[in-house]
Image 1: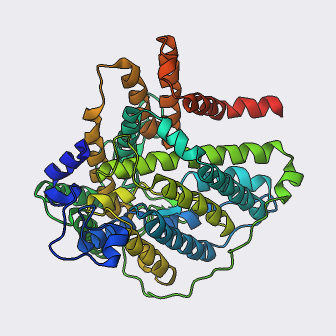
Image 2: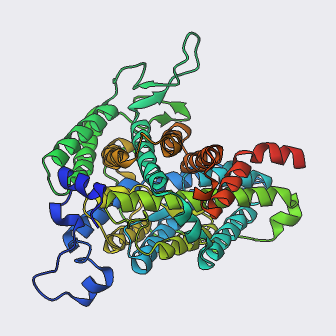
Image 3: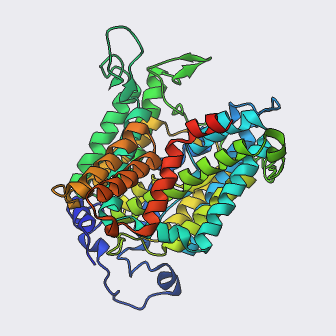
Length: 503
């Protein structure tokens, strides 16, 4: 079946027009081709390799960022986790889980330590217990999600969500990616809390684009957009490489430095990485954090309520974030069926749950599916072969950690903005004249970027959909499971008051 997203992709020509329409090859297919369904999904090995490279370059930052987040926190015993060990474990688990997703689910969806979840673990969970206890809760959450997948409940819940609401989820994630790209690149920034202003964000610094890193982002974005419009294969990957080379040249000439120097902000500096060629390329990975978790001690140490609420929060976040992400990726690649479900949805969700537990077992927080996989799909990736490339590069990153620190946010972020646009085009398939679905779809779309949370957007959309249908006397149109989902989200949004009352 040809979806509207396929048409969009043809027009944008990130891949050739027949990319989403399967056709038989001229010669016999190999066992490798048959297993990964490369030809059946209208792809080629070359496109898969390009897609895998693009996905890696857009999410390689996690090898640096996750250690910075977890490594900056102190647990209840006053202990910190070592940054080199965190970097090695982050790359190892991301590589293994991404490859597992490619082989088992054969879907171009990469995984790594989840942003947001790692902050929750670092700054809310760990300070109340030990690091081993906190990671033990992450393992418990991953096991619980795995049980929900094996019993079929997670897949059933996914299918209970109306198709147009699933489309809205993909659109909202596109806007979420866009704002992440703009903010990471410093193109959009928070306005300082000063008198006489109520504007929360603004353009650049003081409403002006005055930094060289931001200029690199703008030039990279314009080049990528031009390449996309001109139907150049590898447009996104070319944009990332061009921006990185330009950033290296700019830094060599201007000596701009990082955006944080000795604890003091440098607004005109590079975000995440300073683009300089490293003196050392190969390093031996430190894997000392593997297996340092405890699933039982936290319950006796802080009581049952705190661990229970933390596990519930982690569960809800992982449960629905992955659903939204796999819909968005499938939508971008034209791989959804008539019910808005990607191929091998059960396998995708099962691997994701395994990754959540694996992240806890490796002391790097829950691993989850990454939106940045859309960059690879936009480059033509349609199968798990792209994951073999991305996962292999993550495994190499364990030894080549210095190279992963070359690409700054300003060079990688143009890809997120371009992908956000491509995902946004599906908004036209929503029936905006039907307010019963349009209002929930609207809230789903806008709350994701405005609250920096996929789960918040999905929750608002589901609750609103159920309330409106009930108010219109159409309870029979609501899937029974959707009532339970709406109730869970109500508890999720009210978990603060609930905790205070129970405490």
